[in-house]
Amino acid sequence: MSTEPSAHTPLYDPKTDGRTYAPPLDSALARARKVLEEKAGANIHDHDEMLRAAVSLEMRLRQLVAAIDEDASQKQQSGDTRG
Image (tube, rainbow, N blue to C red):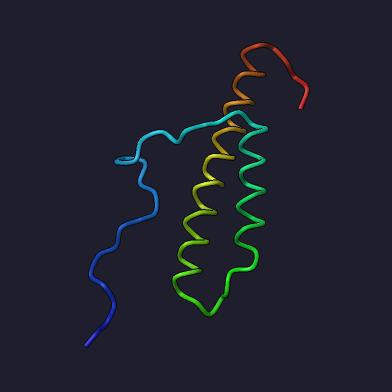
């Protein structure tokens, strides 16, 4: 008898979750650094801590990528070719 669940719910589903909020790039980077610092000490043997860390990191990474994409799009629209 299997103990595996028959279905799962993904952390993110673009069909149902919609567009990710894109904060300003400097803000997204600061938030990502903060959550990295907060979760660095999580106990790898504690399932709940690992779950909270994974969700927090995924959310901040998704926002950081959205902010980078938005920043690149704005630069492209303005004709700014500097990296």
